[in-house]
Length: 110
Image 1: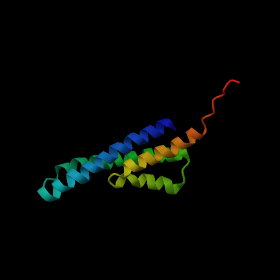
Image 2: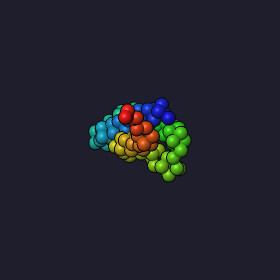
Image 3: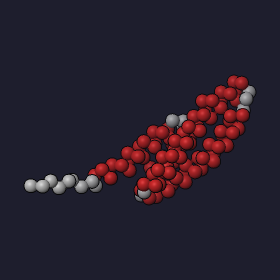
């Protein structure tokens, strides 16, 4: 599951940055300055990357055996600016908590 988590974390950050570029830079350029070049390029890239994000989130959710509601909420996180970063941290926390609980206590000599 470690590789699936790494894939998800990387694509979540990439999708988050692309969405912020699209909303914060591209949209004002398009509507305030009539320059749609950023929206046309970053928008298409974000659309493709979001599909990769959906695949990574689905793969991770199946491996972690999440309920459908959690999987859908994580998948939707890539559609709202800054939320993919929050979701990535939450997902990492969810998957790190069981590993910490399973760590055995060291055996101390008597």
